Image (cartoon, rainbow, N blue to C red; front, side, top):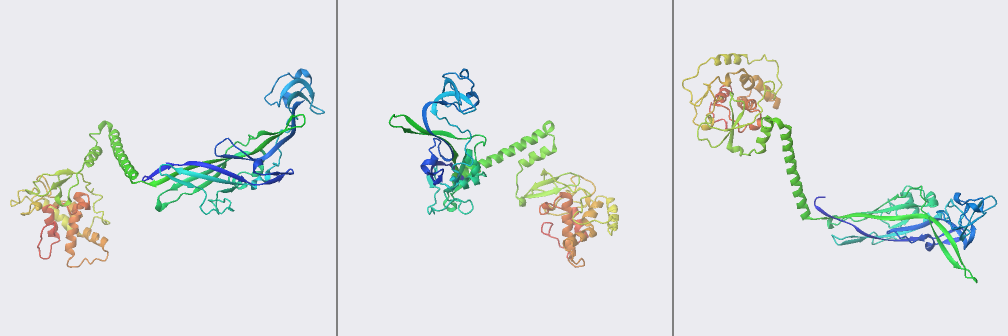
Length: 511
């Protein structure tokens, strides 16, 4: 986690194997079947034995392996030692048994005579032996030490991953079973089993959790026999010669492997990682910008997308109450103008902003459209007549379309055009999208299916909706509704179509 500090575990292991078995008329206790190991954190349990008793140093026939078999003394070289031999050849060929001759050797005789270990294993009952594993771990960074033995340990417990997952006493047969092996088969030739102890510790007081989890699996190749030999020596009296018993033992070596991580909350680590994450976000933004430049490599300065990205990247966020947006029918963009105004809105210079003006086939998308034939035909005819009208000589100097009305308010002194030409109110699209009662009625019913269209105050709703329709059409978004300024000619055209009862208008912003 980004808010925690971690430390790797230091560990020490101690093991104690317990169990007694009786086989071949002999008692086998811990001293008999546990062999000290030179490897760290390992213990070895004997499971099978080849025993050669009463060996004395003298001359005797070699065990009949291929290179030791002979037919005459010429086949045996005096002083020769083979890698598989039990001693040094004397140069004589002697009888091993009634049918086979082998080279004579000077060795501990009789030599070991069995090649394969007994099956079933001599100590096959050792699966019932138990081992106590004591594991101390230490996290130096946090100066914290813990032992895998619970404070209230039931000494009669045996590990079970479901009922006793924290018991440190393990039955050898259960370990082999958890490793998905068969103990009886493995006991014949031996093997190597890993006992894994994993510590995943949360050392915070309010979320403390630090308990071991155990896992088991086999490490060795089944084709290899991990057996070894050792001997016990005795003095023969009265001649003082030594006699020994040779043991070749097979067993299971258990390697205890400890892994672990300790975690603890660290506010400094949290701040450092948050800072690193923020720097990565900065690199991501830089990488994206480089990708955009490379993608537009030949004409990155001419690409509209790149120009838009470059402008938006450094766009300044303005106070919505301090800006206005205007749109002219003879210009393809929306203009942003900052308050306060020192002259008419028509003559105030602003900055160009991007806009997605609604296309003709998208207009009126706020409600379903029917066939073009409707009850607005009379308004279309009126529009065609209005287009032929001349400019009035009593127009404000800021009006370019001939349809605006005088006003003293700077923010209402706005025409639909930047240069002289026909007024947008004379277009059929204005009549269809903005003034059409049929369209506006359907839009109102779309929002409120039970609205009474014969109500005396319906004109107020139609007028306000017409303003919104104009903003959607000319500015491309309802988001600009409270900051977009409707031109004087359009505003009065809408007011004439849907007038107030008292004809008292207080301005577009408060109307």
